[in-house]
Image (cartoon, rainbow over all chains, first blue to last red; front, side, top):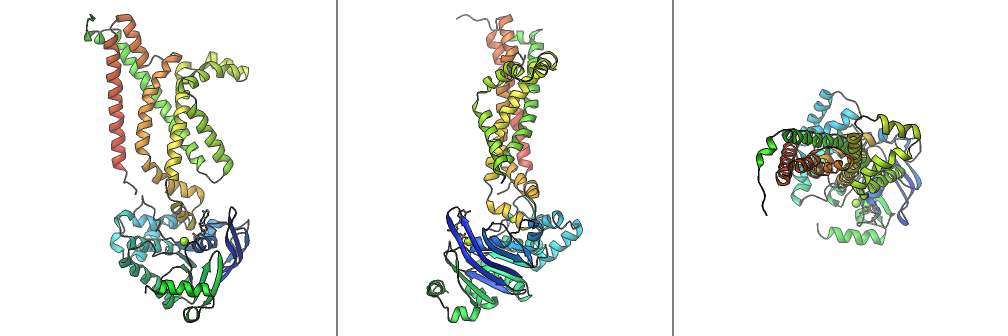
Length: 243
Length: 233
Ligand SMILES: Nc1ncnc2c1ncn2[C@@H]1O[C@H](COP(=O)(O)OP(=O)(O)O)[C@@H](O)[C@H]1O
Ligand SMILES: [Mg+2]
């Protein structure tokens, strides 16, 4: 469903993504890991055209992201995205956060949008917080609202960019639980994360990136039991030490 | 020094009338200039943050030019120079038929100058918001216009109410320069009272007190506005 073929991207003279190819099939969960600065965020932002790329092709559900004629807003509306720092709209209540794009992009009637918002808030365990401002919520709660906001658009796939990295440790699980449930329901997901417990539990495949390259792309079991590259081995030994 | 204090002259005619009229013109110049400043300044400020390099560049040039030429010089340029350099029929029209020429020129001059300062506040307000915030909007399928309209502008304008208050107060103070092209606003009228009555201290004290009252009024209004807006973090 998501197909990245030979993606090259530069920031000025800096070659950020080098010939990256990744596929995600419908219903598949792909975890992307790798050291900081390796290009994970950049790669995932190319998928919905938030970052332009200079070489290669990306298609989502058959639609080319980089092609000149593509209606990017329409494509983006079909792909949910969750950011490291939540990025909730700070001046709007939780309810309005979840309704905004439903109203303005999907043109849903307000009562329908609110009903959808309440259903999703119930699902992420925040039904009683609908009228609060984001600043009145904990980090874990904010991130669950952000997930609900993305799901409200009925996306065909979800992108996560380190969704738990900005959270205090005790809040990580409440967010991961929502994501695990989503994965088990068959959502197509691309998840940049260092939560290897999550990867083991729900990922179908793991991609390891380093210095702008896709170094390894393997089935989850294989990635953890027998990583091929030395770079992935040393990365794994570093982060698994602490688990 | 011997000086005959006589506050009662301020209540005598025609001086009282002059003070009232001067205050009226000060407020009229300032409010009209403020409307121009906020409208033009917001548009220019927004334009400076747009992805289109050319639009942003032109807007930045506006800010730099109007912010860096002294206001007094700008007023003279609008009033004395502009009618001479525009096509002749327009120049004639400005000189002969422009309604309230001094007032109109003062409003335009002060308005466009203040717009440059406002645009700087608007640009800074928008750019202080994280790139991630607008990305979140785009990621949901909102268009550039919708991201500005529903996310960036409402959040940024909450942040820039305090600097807006300062700019609004500055407009009132700067409006006194309108006297140089012949608008009989508060400072001009105080000068006139001082000349006719020889009571300079009383005249200028009255002007000072009125400026302070206006300032306090403006500050009070802006404080109410600020309180009404839920503060965004
Ligand atoms: N907007 C940008 N301008 C210039 N360089 C950038 C920008 N964003 C990221 N980079 C650079 O691109 C590289 C990859 O960044 P990123 O994708 O954020 O890595 P990761 O998410 O894996 O930590 C880094 O070296 C980073 O400094
Ligand atoms: Mg990153």
